[in-house]
Image 1 (cartoon, one colour):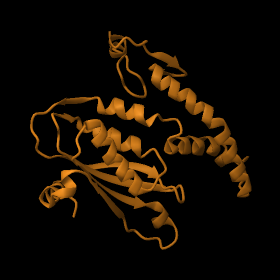
Image 2: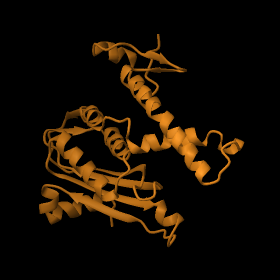
Image 3: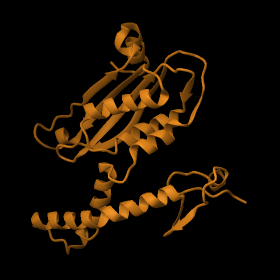
Amino acid sequence: MTDRACANCKILESQLIEYGEHGLIQHKDRLLCRECRSREHKKAFYRIPVVYAVRDLLRTLTLDVNDPNFAETPRRLADLLIEFSGATVDFEKELEEICSAVFPHSSSGLIVSQSIETYALCPHHLLPVHYVVAIGYLPKGYAIGVSKLSRLVDLLSKKSQLQETYTQEVAKALSTHLKTPDVAVVVKGEHYCMKMRGTKSNGSIVVSEMLGDFQESQNLRAEFLSLAGVR
């Protein structure tokens, strides 16, 4: 018999039962674990007032909310804003879950993951930002899977915050949960508030955060930047 998986987090039902949890629950047309079902209920709780707020905004902008082209716009925009505000996310709990998937690693050599892509909304205009993230760290007894680094980068992008703050949060989360003081993060951001309005510039912004030995050692910092493809 095929093992069933949560439609959101992809955890297997057999794993849930092994951990002493309940099996998957039918939620509308999908099977979800209890955590994901709880998150969906929380999202629904936020959605109704946000949908009405978006509808009022469209009316204020003299847009015809009865036009078929705008019929689903309040719901769609509400879902997007809820997702990228982080309103329904328990970030600390999610980070602990992501960073718990580590494996023993005896080497102390530099580990680098590059070209991790994600999106966010800038806090100034609520327009998209495309991030490309490079991460480096010196392991202290164990390492984390590459896919988990991608999940961490994506999770923390679900806050509407400055790129500088985002970069710091990624570095701090890795340092805290991997228990290593030696972390380097470089984030290149393509801001659509620059591309779409004002000067209509195609330029990007690069922000770095160097912790521990990456801050102290020029050679280590240079090695990371070279492996990460940062020029």
